[in-house]
Amino acid sequence: MPKIHVAKDFVLKHDDGTKTPFKKGEHEVEDHVANHWFVKANLVGAKPNPGAGTPAFLRAATEERSRLEAEHHRLESERDAAVTASVREKMEAELADRIKIALEQQAVAAVNAVDAEVAKRVAVATAQIEATVQARIDKAVEEALLAHIEAEAKSGELKAAEEAKAADAAKAAEKAPEKGVKAK
Image (tube, rainbow, N blue to C red; front, side, top):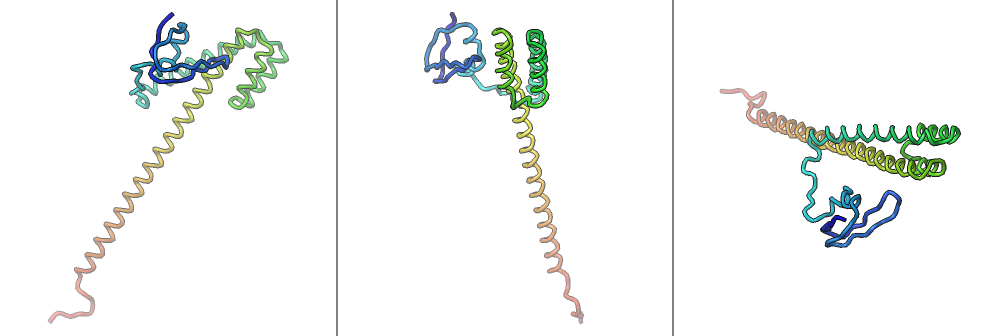
């Protein structure tokens, strides 16, 4: 079993809902735990992704999303093969009507009708879709904030230009000779 070196205390939540606490220091764990992305992010020497937000990162994220969506569709096909016709119709209606809201309800319905292995795969796919949806929401919020900041900056530039124009007009008015005064 591999050894990991934890940088700070954290709790790993497993797909089945159980939790494993990790204290700072060295631990001997199973391979799937050592390879979990969240565990890797908490190891000594782990660094945040410096490329986040770059075009290459966004392309990679788009490709990963497509891969996850393809995997989700594959898992749905396996589930549909094992589910009875009435439960399958119910699940398809729920997916069409309440994709995000009903994700947990769909997982419960799948567990009731599908063998344990297929149910486990559906829960994993559901978590990946939620992460993808959250990433899309986060990206949209970030883009909206950037647009708002740019609009405020542009508004400030226009206001400054108007104030400069008004100041120039005031200076020009001061330099102009008064009407009605005749030169001798």
